[in-house]
Amino acid sequence: MTDDFRLDRSVSNYAVIGNPIKHSKSPQIHSLFAKQTGIALHYQSIEVPTEKFDEYVDLFASQGGLGLNITVPFKEEAHSYCTSLTQRAELCGSVNTIRFDELLNSFGDTTDGQGFINDLRINHQINIKDKAVLILGAGGSVKAILEPLCEQHVAQITIANRTVSRAEELADKFSGLGNITACSYSDLTTQSFDLIVNGTSLSLIGELPVIPESVINNNTCCYDLMYSDTATVFMQWANELGAAKVMDGLGMLVEQAAESFLIWHGVKPETDSVINALRK
Image (cartoon, rainbow, N blue to C red):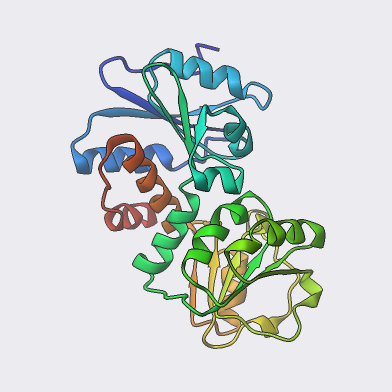
């Protein structure tokens, strides 16, 4: 296992772990942040066998690693692993950022939701106060964005999912934070929305959630949490139906990374130039 990764003893060490991981842009993002802020670090991607999460994390920390980003499929395992959790990580049940101290205690946080809100509000100048929001899907990504969405004082959130019971579980869990309801895709027949968030992974296989065109009007903003070198099928669909603004999740990826960087280094990097570099 020690052949799977090696730490650079001359600088502080960080990594992203997942399976698969070769596609990850995180090493490039954190390299650009490090250059921008003048912080010397080594950041690598590590592919972890699905049954060996704890073993790999223990080894990384014991060798002097200071922080990890966690991606699929390990965010819930990371939540169970950590010595302590932030309130937002505890609530959403997942962790994407771990910080280790000198005693190898592990502190877990989730920056996905804040990254989403930062991209929406700062990069795209979208104000969702008093707006109606539709979220497609009920997986881990959706869990991470529900609390920060509610903090923006939206009028309502509708979670639609193929398996309605999963959407209902999320609506119940977060019901104390705002007006949240659940339904099936086929129930979306009577209302259009101000913001539609595709929280499913269907874009990765070129498919769409089966939802009616009536959910979009010419004031609707559509956001796909997935990203691609070209417009995702969800983005193409939204554009064809005349949505006011259509976005992918690349900005969210960079913004959540910036929040992780802040946790580890106490410095918040500038993100606009990094997003532009990745687009190119």
